[in-house]
Length: 231
Image 1: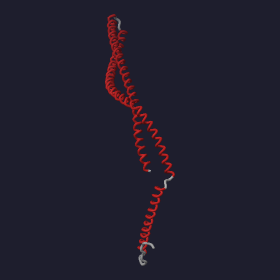
Image 2: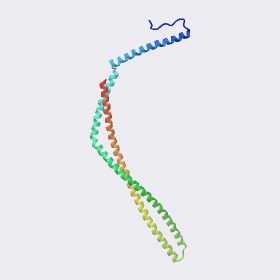
Image 3: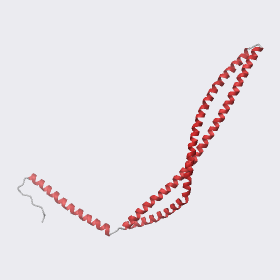
Image 4: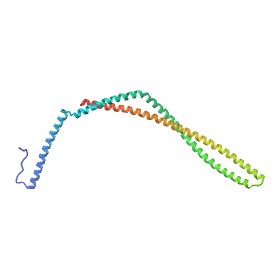
């Protein structure tokens, strides 16, 4: 009944064992292939002729999700239509502010150079003030040591001259401080303008992301409808 030849009885024991092992492997492979074909046919029949309750429930959930997504899509479309003009307006404002920021950037660089220049001048004047202070101190010491009217008169003239120079230096320092404060205020105005532009960009990004979400959902909905049609 078995479709294989029997082994000769006078064959050596080791060789006979090897042939038995090979014969068993061939039989086992033959039955395994038959079992695989039977399981494949059974699975195919089960899948395409007996839809499970789980599959039907999943399809029902998918239809509900599609309806909810349709509702959300309609809302998103309404939002995009409502804010379309606002998006365009924000885009124009951002472009306008970008030009202003570039212009203010050049001004900032110019002011920074001026501030550095004024800082060098302040440092220079500070050294001069210190030098004149030492001279005034020296003249004060001379006043304490002098005893004649002529010497007192000469020292007084020197002190008056140094006082005039100090007044001129103080005036220059006041002008430099006032100019620096103006530059600081201009920098703060530019920073505030930059903050407004960032807010506008954030609003534009939110609206743009909404548009992208609508497009992605439309692709997903189309794909789900095709799959539902195939099922």
